[in-house]
Image (cartoon, rainbow, N blue to C red; front, side, top):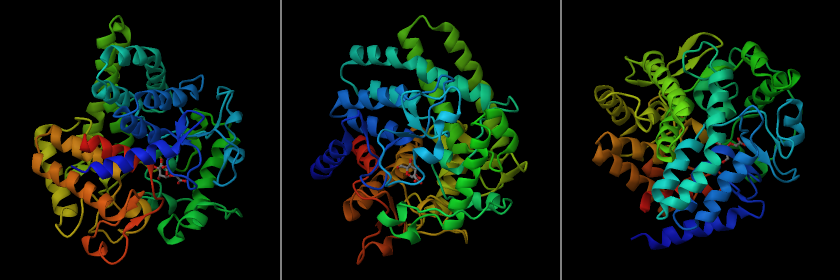
Length: 435
Ligand code: 9YW
């Protein structure tokens, strides 16, 4: 079943793979290596080309800074077809940044730990994979140590993100509340994304002003974590980001135990894990909404909106069974209308919902993949199956797009896949779901 789709997906990944040992998220639109894209891409490659899967992760970790930080974009080439590029981000300002690669000075959801475990589970040659994991795992551990040392200012086991691009959900309506508190300058710049993709489906000019403004503040302080924590107008505890860290902690614990002789690291990871899960459940769960939400650390207030990130903790085993049931109820009530594909990226009943605009409503395959796994884990087989079938249908009807309109009525006369086409993680994660 679905042989043609799998064939096409493999073709996309292979075509997007670059001689530098990494894969483009999407040709033309995203001409470099992105952190969480690389993780999802490696899972796809693991099913049919393990050397490329390993190379993807090795290249990513090779760009790690001396303090354990892993950047969100690694600029392998000098192309100026993407804005803002290496000359704007200036990673060289940080004293411990990579000397080998230019990058951004911000990160993305820490997926690498659980990606290593997924690769291990997929591989028929466990011994070979374990040897590979042994050569890379300490870098991932150092990355987690970086987060707990530098991004957890209250020492509560929850790390902050200082830029919306770190969340991976760039223009989510959740950030509107934060932008309302910031008086960013109006910059004069030439965007590149809108020359590849319809401008109405991308963030606005004003939003880009805010994005650049936060980076300017970070640059003025050479990307010092302490200064960023003190000064960034955007400082958020994100349930998706923190759930990825917790999921990856769990994977590192399992993998270190398998490797053996790493008791100190296992103990440390278990300590982080316990504190993180406890705080996550007490601080980020909203009883009234029946799901997890974001917390605005700068303005000290919860951001009470429901997005697909609200359900990502299912993937990381964070809620107990009772809470999971509440979350599934919220999800099906708000997002589960049979006239809609699961799962919109933002609450379809909210007035901020926009079914065509990027992270303000459309369905994204990486979130669907996490929800599929999470729902399966908690025993919600039928709903998990619906997420899977919806994912397949969206790709079959439209193609391997970056994001999709959740409204079924929109898929008929016109295409309802948006953003870039032949998008790598849509291909990679479909391969995984169908395998
Ligand atoms: C940008 C590459 C990236 C993803 C992000 C997504 C988008 C890039 O594309 O951001 O220029 O805004 O939001 O999650 O990693 O696919």
